[in-house]
Every structure is written in structure tokens, then in C-alpha cells.
Image (cartoon, rainbow, N blue to C red; front, side, top):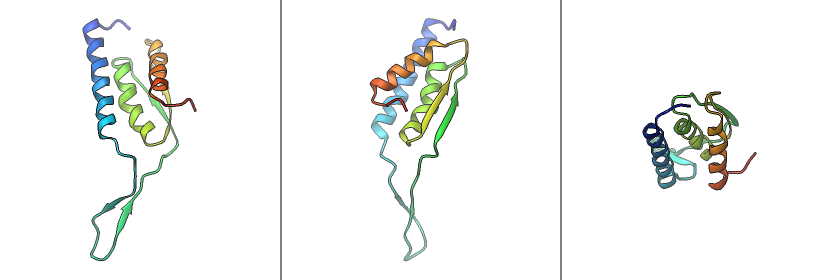
Length: 106
């Protein structure tokens, strides 16, 4: 894309920190009890909403794919990622990383 190496390294490091945060702080989405009126119990449960179409802009193509994609994948949604035309190999690199991390195709 033409980004300086130092900027690209910073973007990759930011993506790594983001992924580490989710790996250390992610709890499966289980029913959670919330405060309610006396003698009543209210639970909130989150469900996947389906397929997410994620558009990643050209300025931070690596990091923004993780920022928008990873939380949705962890919630059980399917992710279709579309990268900017100016950085086509980013999509393949991220796909390889996701497969190595255990996410399956489909």
C-alpha cells in the first residue's frame, strides 16, 4: 500500500495487543443475571445474529480487520471481510492467521 515500515509495524503490534486482550478477557457469552426488581430474576443472553459483512478501509487494513472481525467471530457470527483494492494480500494473510488460530472456513 505504500505505508512506511514503522507505521506498518505499529499497526501489526496494535492488532497483536487487541488479540491478546480478547484472549485474556473473553468469557463465553453465557446468560448473565442483571439487577431487577425485588423477587424477580432477569437474565440476558446474547445470540449470534448471522453473517457480518465487514469492510476494511485502506489506511489501517490489518488492524481494522481484527478490530471489527474478531469480536464478531467470538460471538459466533460468520464474517465476510472485504479489503480495500489497494491492499489485496492483507485478506489472505489474515485468513491464514485465523485458520492457524483455530477458526474454520465456513
